Length: 268
Image 1 (tube, one colour):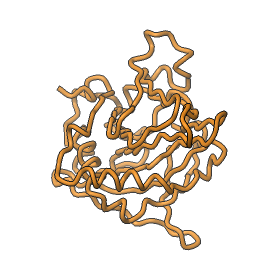
Image 2 (cartoon, helix red, strand yellow):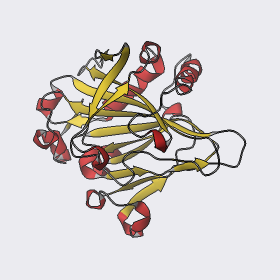
Image 3 (cartoon, helix red, strand yellow):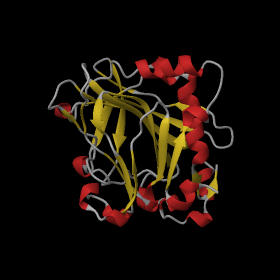
Image 4 (tube, rainbow, N blue to C red):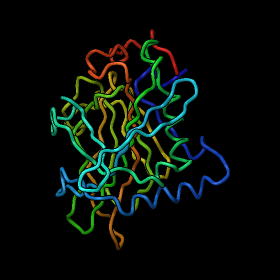
């Protein structure tokens, strides 16, 4: 039984689910990729840093092919669009700096993408074509007491892609960063304003490769703001976010896999 398919939410501890010789080295390289993430130019005051890349995953073979970047002033970027699903950037295309080629070639990142993809399920017509994967490296970092780092959007929300998976890479010297899962009727609200019965679950990702996935039509999700902890030095919450959407039709309102009819859907 798939918890993701039944409830729209699933927790994973990938450090115990993905095992191969050299995983420690590959994880170290992924972790170091967060050290020099550029600031999010759309919200430089929110202490958020990020890179992004787009790929397609082939059905059945699970081959991953990275899509070409756009180049602006000699720098590589990928476009990102959520339509009406992010109220902070409604109908707005955002352009994020590309992941480095070294990061794209990281063996652990490829295994994480494949693991996530194999958890997804689609209407048969959507499963015939390659599936688009958006890969976000996002760091919330606070330098001093009083600093706050905020994710986007800062409420219970849906992403507009059928599936999103979050994988913690590093958490150190921070307070906050709580994750919450609720139902779609609570979209746009804050968890602390809800009755306990309206919160499906809440939790903290603490260790590298602690992860969760959501099927967008069935839930809303949230990650709380981050403040600096009591130790010396900056605080940080770094995570990889991976979303999947079909390449058949771009408009989420027209994608049958977005209707929540899980009994009619098949795994890839």
